[in-house]
Length: 73
Image (cartoon, rainbow, N blue to C red; front, side, top):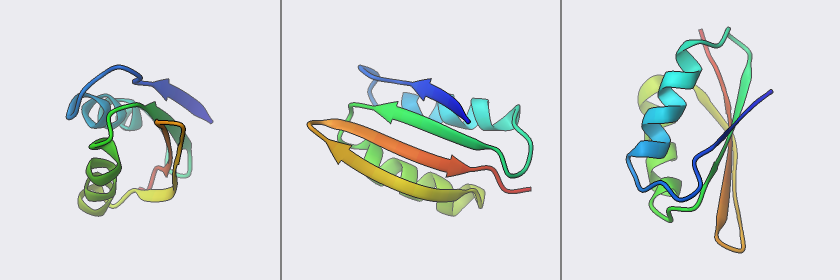
């Protein structure tokens, strides 16, 4: 599982960096994204709906958002 730390970046940068990272991954691989922009919660849900990748989990603890995305296809 790869980890992408986008802490401190404002949307849409966390999603754009995740999209770039997912392009290099094989189907079934998982990417964990760490973000601090509150808007990322909505953005990652929309991104996964649009891309077809699976949002396995989206959590928030003390202002730190963690997303686990499974690459599809």
